[in-house]
Image 1 (spheres, rainbow, N blue to C red):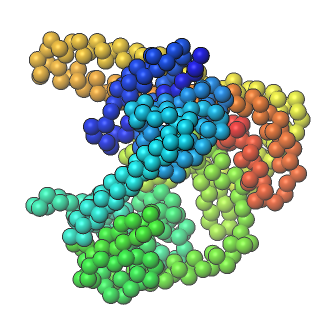
Image 2 (image 1 turned 120 degrees about the vertical axis):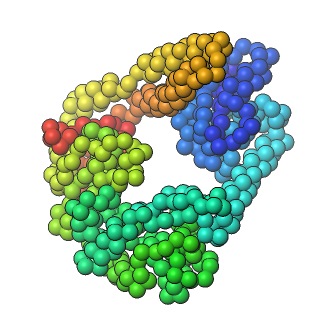
Image 3 (image 1 turned 90 degrees about the vertical axis):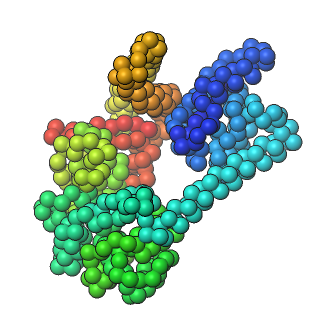
Length: 496
């Protein structure tokens, strides 16, 4: 009996593409005539195929590696990946595991040389189509931006947009005082940490020292001059437009191809002040490079989590001492709109004390019986996915009931019911994502049962290390995360 995994994906950004339900139905119909088989469906709704970071896909591949399937079936090959590099990697991985990949609508046998060639050609076309769409969107947005309009993306700190008569949005610096204060303080202190601290004391919500640097290096606030354009060009920017005293708008910074366009908004920082700040930042950057060889590596960075909100603790220092602080505690006001309330964990955790506490904990696990006891207890804490599935089923029953009621109501009377359906549908989308994460955790838990000895050996090796870089690498082979409660002074661990 063949064990078949049906993988379905639909991006929220693509109109007129086949729904998840259609993909599942057609795949199941295909296998009706193929004899006895068991089928499990994996759904990723709202995820792009540009990479493989999709929860249902990750869970499916874990199960494939455990030998749970003979066939992976898709509606089209671009459901698996729209990136040829990712596709070839996945295809090769399935081939090594002796698992067939079948595209039910594209009609070829991947077990033959011709079938494999056709599959690669189709994957290449999907990749080319994705790249072409992305380039067209980028080109269109850039043409609009060159005319001075704001085309979207993350707004710079202290900025907003205004819609004008031509229907386009234009950038406006709304918090001029905050921007000017930041530049003034940095020129006075010459230190990012001190500037960030002072800004927080003055009541400005700027998440981290890194955010502070992003504000100070952003040419959006600066008047466009030949000197500033020359500086930006020297630092890798393509300059669009002639300097005329207006501010710049930047695009493509994350892609490594930054563009600075002379916009139509009024700046708030004179060119001379902007260039002074950049010069000081460049000097400090060079100093940091020279001293980086002697800088201490904090081997718990990114591994330690907040017990209240689950976010990473990030490293902050005042020049003398280093601390771990909850990321969510230092979020900017703009970011908090997306994530909700600021975390209540306001503790500044002394780095050496926490490192010593974790060292002591690991040394205690050198005793094999203590390690096994700890390992079993932590594994029992994995949540059951059954409750989440029950919540999804319950919501679907309510939705179906509401749909039946709408059929006999007027448009006006049905509005509250439609709002309720929308609310429950959104809730189910979140629950489905949680369900995939839980199922993936359960699979990882199953895989981890055979990794006890590997984990224990890493604990023994870690206990002998003194080099921070080696400790940083080794600790990540033992724990998935470490949760530190600064109130109870307790360390909770989660094994890989």
